[in-house]
Length: 121
Figure 1 (cartoon, rainbow, N blue to C red):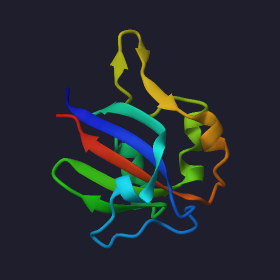
Figure 2: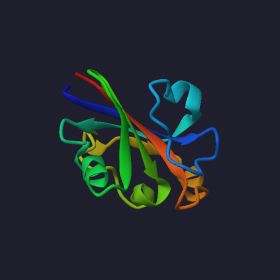
Figure 3: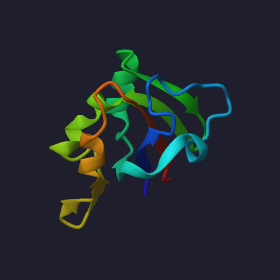
Figure 4: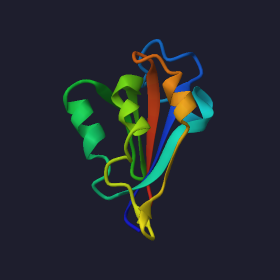
């Protein structure tokens, strides 16, 4: 399958400021596990986060051959409480995604989160 595995995580430090890009960021070390949300997206499934980056509402911290890491505020992912993620891959007849709605609701709107997108190809 061509596409992206997407995960959204809280920062261990509470997310009072954007995650930093200092070439040492590791979502395994800097993020709270388990993820707030996770899904497999089609190849165009990062368009919405690219728009947030373009509007300076999110920042791309790392871009590699097989993964990218972003920081985004909770208010910009709250749509996940009501609807599936954009371009989510459908297994069978319905979209498959996981959202811990209680955890997402508990995030202050201004909290900075970590979004990781890994190449599924």
